[in-house]
Image (tube, rainbow, N blue to C red):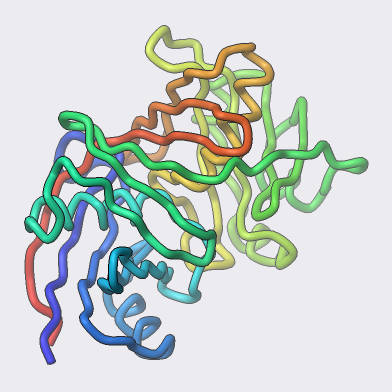
Length: 264
């Protein structure tokens, strides 16, 4: 049976920016092996599978190598497609049932707002030397969230210039990935970041909503402000507006459809 299949650039206002995600709309339950095979075929950082189920949409995310528990840009892409294809009216929120619980997307003009769980960061007692060595940076803070290490450096120039050893990073199997971040020099952004998860088959993710579930509460506490704007400094680049709400974070971004097709 054919299924609608889209590619959406998320956390950007223009094509070929932000983070591309595939979105596959299915109308029946599919097993994980099938979804993993499709994700490997698409070979993007994430492929989202969306299935209508009563008054909620079941949402699953797969990298080319594994299913993941939380993904921001593919959730943004999925909501964008449901509104754009008129499966859901634009003025109606989209509710997703996921491995991270219920996630809600709402639309405000050109921006899509995601209600996500906050992922607190705890300072590690001892710096994970293999991670720091693999990132090739001099950290001012090293912490760990539920999924990732967060490493702060003194300047945004260090974030931009970092050239991680991806082979070494991939050997750290106790975490999903590594977030590298610093305070921004720009008046447009509060902080900058990059995100690496070679263990899941993605050396550097272009723009990562789930990483901002840690970055937002972390920088909110340091800057003493709840409304923040982050720039993820990958080659493609992306902007995330965010609000720290304690146990939750609101992440806002834009999205553009690049490809519309059919999975045979």
